[in-house]
Image (cartoon, rainbow, N blue to C red; front, side):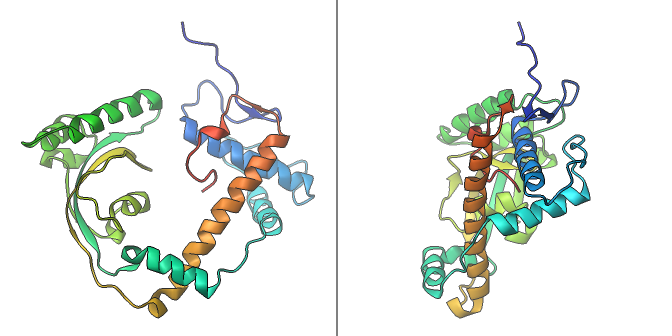
Length: 256
């Protein structure tokens, strides 16, 4: 018997309703946004009359107030040159120009109403199957029979990809690494869950540190922001009454 539906709320404000298809990660995103919206109210940055979000959409005033709240609440130090140099030295492939990888994939698409937990189990079983394949073209066969991407007809072939050719989430997983073969992890993007195989790599040109210093500093700022935001949301969640949503289950930045 299916368990009764629990209306997910933050301090009594609904996040979703039974007739609305929404996966767990999207629900957590809404919960974090609502925590910030209510914190902005508590700080006097947003009117108490601001309407509750409708299907996750907040008002323009709420969006502006949240930005002001985060500017005030998150004190982020400027990365030092030493920190930038250490980060650059440890992540040289990330800053190479022209790096590309030859990739194919099997896509398990997240669509409205899909059971995300069941989808993940299918994707994980597929990943294990393909990682255990000792030869032949099992990957191509599975892509043709299973993938929700048009590339499935070509055995999942995506060709040679640079960072600008694919979703940032995918680029992060396939570029700047040395792995060849089926990646040992599922890759989650805005399109769904991917089983990915890297067939070949070309490293590209490596510019000197001085040429990418600004990009390195920005990467460190983003890391510091994500860490501070996660900690701030954990603080807000600890002070709130949450129902029907588990923020601890999120392994990615809680707000994007």
